[in-house]
Length: 92
Image 1 (cartoon, helix red, strand yellow):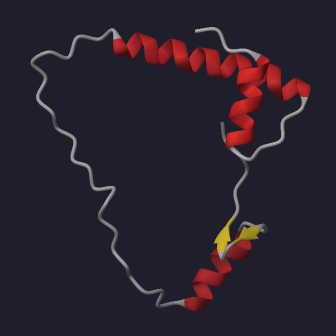
Image 2: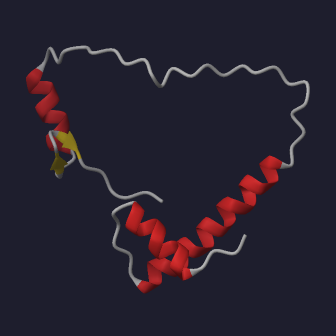
């Protein structure tokens, strides 16, 4: 699958990222490599392989924060914060 600069721009927009021309070229190559790898995985014959994954995505434990000081220190360690959470560098 050939990835174009337009594809990178659309992906960046969906990810709420701003990318410059140099980054666009880097991401273009990375995305193309990623999709080639996914295509390779799709070719693997999985007939007869027992399903072993369990989807726990819907399960969430609501554990109250018991150490507000530690929680605040951890958020401060990241520097940038957003919506009472640590803000991390973009990853694509």
